[in-house]
Image (cartoon, rainbow over all chains, first blue to last red; front, side, top):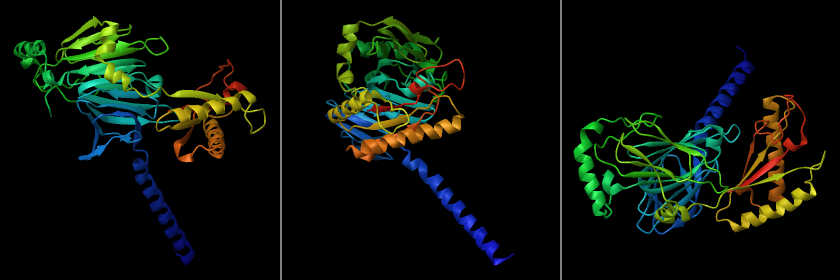
Length: 158
Length: 223
């Protein structure tokens, strides 16, 4: 094999590796699901076992747990324009958030472990009804384009 | 996890509920797939879902599923379901004032609704129409009024050409507007762009590939 050809092959290999790096790295860039827009009293984000403050402007990612204290409440706007808010003594897990801004296809799963939640659905539901789901300890709510509130009384479910 | 003080009545419900039904939910699956509902802790629950009318007065729907129970569709204002445990779902109509009061702190924390603006271009030019020029002023006012404002610039195309071509074209339109907004003083880091191609026409023609200036637009969402 000629030297030129081998160089060419190395270049191709390098390009391929660089491309692979870019592909592997991109989910980290796309991790933002939403932002905290309202934060009152005690509000915390739990991410990878770490506790983070949740001021206005804080990023919410899939797999985050959001907790509010007795005086706390939090409002989050997601990238598909869905809104979620939680009242005092609430625990919310953003289990999955996937949204394609071109096709509007996506999946949005949230679990309310305790407390209260208000939901305003966004573009994911407009594109695919019930692609947004709220799970409670005893039920699942499939969202078909709407606004609603949910309450889970922890003193009873625990 | 902390416990909250429970009204006596709920405590009674817990005892009664647990006695009557504990065996039924002992091995409920934890899956979150539609139809398969996780409960699994083998104890009573007290959960409530209440459908609200939308801000524009219309009403959507929520489907409530709980293992061992028929699916319930809530599709009227203040239609509600109380869930006393897996499979124990009771439909009811909630009092509007009571719902607003019971969920007041939660509803008060809802972020300001995202607002959408449409911008049109002068034909064959890179400039906005006079109406759209005034819209830009409103966009600035909206951005200034919101905490942590985010802006999505979404390009749309008419039906002339392939899907791929229009995805590209609509994205280019959005990027052009992003540059323009940045030049007018909105920091680029707040602006994300997307191209919806020909998926979301404002005006629909019978001919599948009809040209339509109303569909050649850029939508701006301020969140």
